[in-house]
Length: 187
Image 1 (cartoon, rainbow, N blue to C red):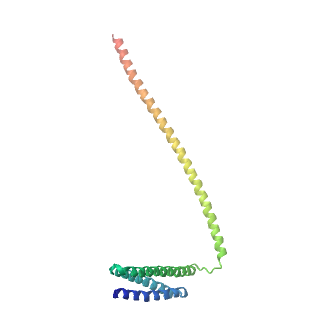
Image 2: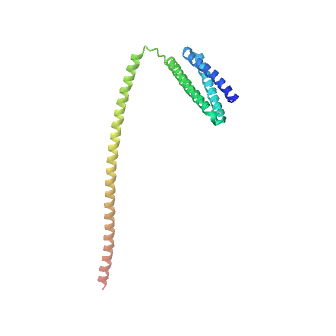
Image 3: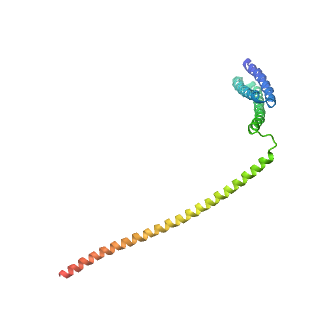
């Protein structure tokens, strides 16, 4: 086993123990201390990921016959890392909820007024939805009427063009007839 891998392994063990300890402290802290602890844990998680990458590179350089054992270790380290990230996420969510409650001034006693406010908003949304649906129906009907009018106008245009063509043809025939009659009168 390479000395570098052992060094990375020891560093990883120390770092994950420290991360676990700090994650446990996050819910108990408040204010600026909590923000600072969250930022520190984020940095340490990044360091742990980098250590895992370095260890993974070392495992790739180990001869094939002993690589399986180290690959199993790497899998367990990666699972541990996933668990740490999930724990951190849970502690951050609790942290976010506390910050949100501080910002909104939510002390839990106003749940009835919030419920009433939500119901009122829901009713408004439903009324707006009904109005939008009615407006959409009117728009569809208007579009259908417009399309029908356009079809009628197209048909009328064709009729007018045919009448104009017949008129021109009649005019041409009248011109011929006039010339024939004029020719007959001269004879």
